[in-house]
Image 1 (cartoon, one colour):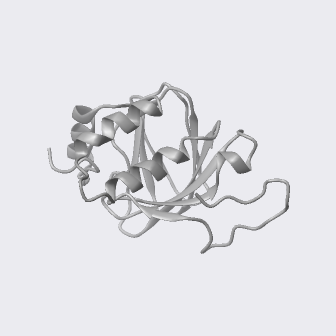
Image 2 (image 1 turned 30 degrees about the vertical axis):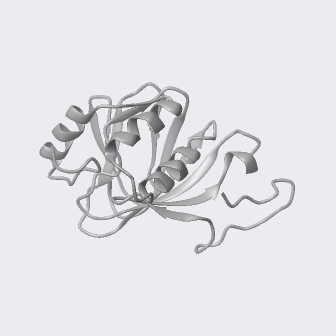
Length: 172
């Protein structure tokens, strides 16, 4: 984890911050919970065209806010499908089933604000686990449980089929 002393002013430039690849979506860590006094964390997600960024899931502890920087983001929020363009801000409250994807032909990039902070460590732990030579997808539910994250594999397959997306959970 690369953190900066939160008591000192600093800039996170466009190439700064730890970056990891979760096979289907990238994560660039811009502000860790340890740097924000716990209030929030901030990550950037580049999402390839036609890719679901995350399985259908819900957080039990965090709210998420997505700010679209580039491209077109689609999202399922409860029963509603919404689309965001550059400059749009999409609220994904805790305890609501949701997922999101690149709904355009080109690159999509979003800033993801997570409040309170801490869930960024899920991405970091998941990336480290996925890089292990003994990794298998059966390891993921245990990691998700530590972060109070519920995942719906059947719902994920349904969203992919309805929107013509590639799933982060692989073929169903």
